[in-house]
Amino acid sequence: RYQSLAYNRVLEIHKQHLSPVVTAYFQKPLLLHQGHMEWLFDAEGNRYLDFFSGIVTVSVGHCHPKVNTIAQKQLGRLWHTSTVFFNPSIHEYAEKLSALLPEPLKVIFLTNSGSEANDLAMLMARAHTNNIDIISFRGAYHGCSPYTLGLTNVGPYKMQLPSGMGCQSTMCPDVFRGPWGGSHCRDSPVQTIRKCSCAPDCCQAKDQYIEQFKDTLNTSVAKSVAGFFAEPIQGVNGVVQYPKGFLKEAFELVRERGGVCIADEVQTGFGRLGSHFWGFQTHDVLPDIVTMAKGIGNGFPMAAVVTSPEIAKSLAKCLLHFNTFGGNPVACAIGSAVLAVIKEENLQENSQEVGTYMLLKFAKLRDEFEIVGDIRGKGLMIGIEMVQDKMSRQPLSREEVNQIHEDCKNMGLLIGRGGIFSQTFRIAPSMCITKPEVDFAVDVLRSALTQHLERRVK
Ligand code: PMP
Image 1 (tube, helix red, strand yellow):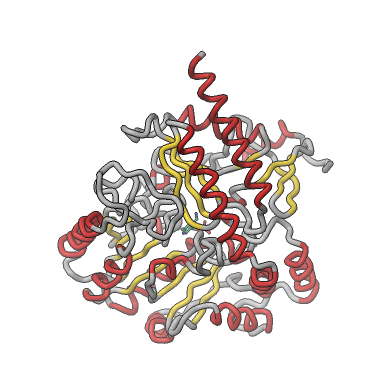
Image 2 (cartoon, protein in one colour):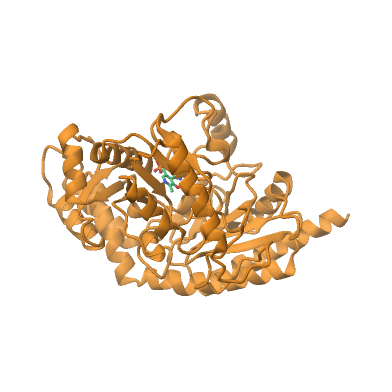
């Protein structure tokens, strides 16, 4: 047990001195003191199975011993150089990361956060194409810097002040909530239950979403586009997947109009999706720019943009890129350790195997409970969408979802939230989780749902 500030004192300080914009989960916010791999411990020593890994960030486990040892070694050697000096930790990392990306994606820019990485990708797209407009999906989250806020279009994160000049949003081809349904899941063991009667491999829906996309390109953007940003699976919007083939066609349309395509791998990268190391590979596309953060540093502030030499040169023509902390030796040592652990511990394979096991187990809950509307995702990025009933697909009220969420926490399971109405539970544990832990999580959620229905009857 760890002695430090008392719980009430923490609440007081939070209220007086920390940003009122920051929201906390749970009626009684959780005060965490320690973490070990997929487990977290609060001030009273209660333990929680962390199935949201600090918002899809702790990729290989909290305080992973190998990552800790390497970080401590680097802390004792050299913390900081800034971009004007060289350091082997940085150069080794750049070589390792670039080896994981296909040609021509070989030039790396290191930053501190996903928002910064996407800011830089926006600049690159504009510098390279000499166009201004950048397109993103409704429901997308690409950051909350003044630049990227223009691309972020999800629920409470949508800026109520003018932001992001030149940013256009386009309809999200959401297989569950979109008007035309569609299928993302010809390769998934779990099929989305459709509103329409189309065949499981229906591609009509994809064509209709593509027509909408063309409409955005042709009308709003005056036929010139700098770039198109897409998350391979939307995270904050509640693990939203697109119809199969959509991204491939969308990329072609953007390129026909002179734009570049940017894959935001902040949540989907580093093996989380199981079948592939990068989310874009699951769509069979090759982006011009890839951005990454979160899991790259297992929770240490670190992010990157990877692009081709050609696009990097276009940026160099108009900007001397400098970043005091981006890619410092400690971050890079941690980045290398994370890559080593993913490989040595077969964590991508574990994401695939345990993720598929979990998807099938959660699919049973969808069959058991009328209020579980959809189970979707890939590898260890899973969404459980809560509805009033399967027919109407009206989102379950926020109060009810809050209560189920709180009950799971009280039974020792931490899961995330997402979606415009905060109606989707998000599951994204560290990639080291095991099948018995999945069984525990499914049992907890089943109990929370049962308790909820019993409360409703009373
Ligand atoms: N892109 C995506 C897909 C994200 O989920 C996030 C963070 N939620 C970001 C970008 C921004 O990352 P950061 O919070 O590190 O700025």
